Length: 366
Ligand SMILES: *Cc1c(COP(=O)(O)O)cnc(C)c1O
Image 1 (cartoon, rainbow, N blue to C red):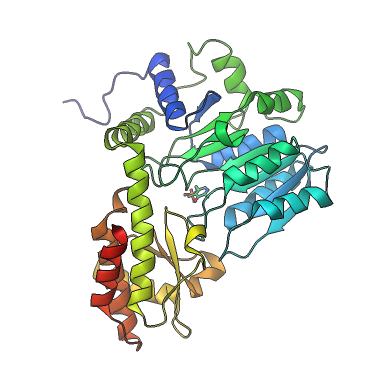
Image 2: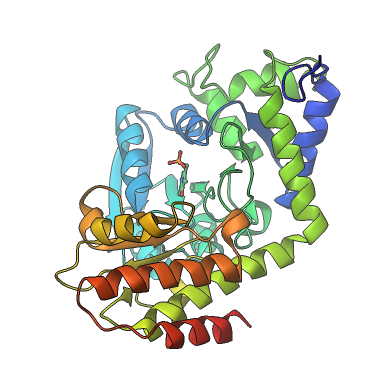
């Protein structure tokens, strides 16, 4: 008996290339798009190790936990790293980037996370890209949490390395990822003696043995199930329309924010300014005296399928994450999340207004 997940015909090189082209279309890019056979951390690490070295001065923007990781990789590569950390309740501004270049004109690499699902903020990449381009630095962007939830335009924004994953707003698999690579970025890699070669982390291997060879023969057996799932999720986005998918995420964020404020009981948006709050996920600050992870655990007892999580690490005490992305970017998921949080909160003492929260969320969804 054939099994739908197991007895598949091999994925051909032509099919693999066609999926890459579809991802390129989603990014509206003419750059090379390389699909990597692993979670997004694979191209995120591979791109840094390929382009950064002892001669690099990197401006590493930290607006959440991933920025910290990138800084560690950059230092490990021998780069001089200038960390620009902004409080997690806000976004970085193009002015702050401009000031960093003024103080350190030697900066030739900028790493930035577009949207942070872990902290709930989103950064103005278009404006920052202009500053980075004025100074000729290489621009590395983690767009894993923004792709599908808001526009991601590497060509228009001058992004040299734009990494995406399908598991957030694209509603797809976690086991494959992609990176768009500019000509400038390829040139840096080629000139970097320490860039990974003949390695699973290597982007250059894909350039030399896949792209430059006409994409006719794959480097190794493709992750077939993940590739088919990636194709399916891109097809689903194309069918709904990328604009509609993004509008759904923006509406979910607006509804969650408005609903949480109307709920009362001391619950507050974690990111102060709505314009700096990511469409992919909304973070909330738990009222003083209420431990966020306990509140989330209680809410999940009522329905374990709700897209709720506490913040990671030290943030677990004060941060609640509503991960309204992918198939959870719906009015129903937002309503149920607010209701469960409200019920859990009222058990702990604060007075909440569940009706007001529901009405505010509905009004904001429009
Ligand atoms: C989710 C995410 C990733 C991927 O990491 P996982 O923890 O494996 O999901 C990378 N970067 C950002 C900004 C993300 O939000």
